[in-house]
Length: 225
Length: 225
Image (cartoon, rainbow over all chains, first blue to last red):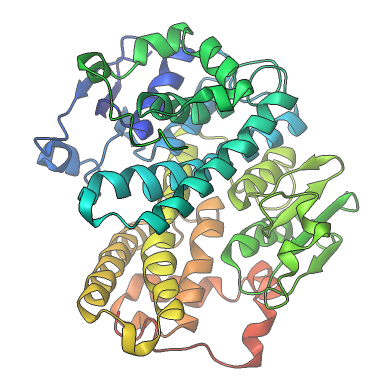
């Protein structure tokens, strides 16, 4: 069922991790794939760009259907295999609405944590950091985390309700990325309990970024959050 | 059918325009709504923030289901009313994949046109503009437009195939926004033919940003593209 598929992915990329979680949850383990090296710019190789002119991973095909944007791959797989493995988008229309709402809201986590903070810290030499700007970036990420802390505290243990859904596929990788880079979850007890539970899920353990085993991340990135 | 719904929206906001197009295409005209004033910061009012803690529009509810992120509203409505009005996401799995791929790719149009270019131009005093940086921003938007020119030239008249779908809901408002701010479509013949056709669609005419009738936009924004 998955032998016609092919996924190009990179270790530690949240956009890659999301469809990999869906593939495991849908019981499609063993799909053909290739891990590329960002350091060697392999995402800009002809092999990738002939399928994905943007030169990015994930790059994914299923037979002659090419779907490369991470969110699109997730929805494509759930739509193709609604009754296989974990049901990530329920039949109930209201619950579907609540889940796609939270999925879309993770764009704000991406912006506050990854674009505004992690990428700024990685790309700026230490003596060039704007400390005032950095304070507002930390505050923005804190405000974002408070929203999710509230969502999780009010739900039944997952982002929406008491089952693992597409909303968890979209949210969990950010929490793991945060923890790796020093985020202290003691300040966010509902997110902390959520992290402890979901990190041991089989799909999560199987897809855990392999290079994270090589050593810790830079805990100064999210330490002040 | 739509009397339990309520939409808060602002004129000229692409995130508002997208669900408004879906509501019309699904035959849900006449839904209760309120146009808010961005100038008066009405999106930060208690009336909005009690439904949407982010203080943004669109803010939307359907009975007790609150869905505020524009992409989520679009998918929620299509999922709730798949057989009403225009079918925006087809039953065919491959076609569904191609459509959600293009929907997700519009995030790149948002980044290159709106965030990097229009917002930079609107927020930066003329004598503070970095001309070199501006050149790369124009080039990035040109590269993005070339991709979409290719997609449209190879398709059957719409973003995916020969029918108006969710991919058009997500893409068309950016083209109209571009044209209003000086984008010269003569350089992009497939996008130009697409714009001429879709702008006269009833759902598009009904939802055209009302304040655009008050006067032209600043054509210097996208003039150099």
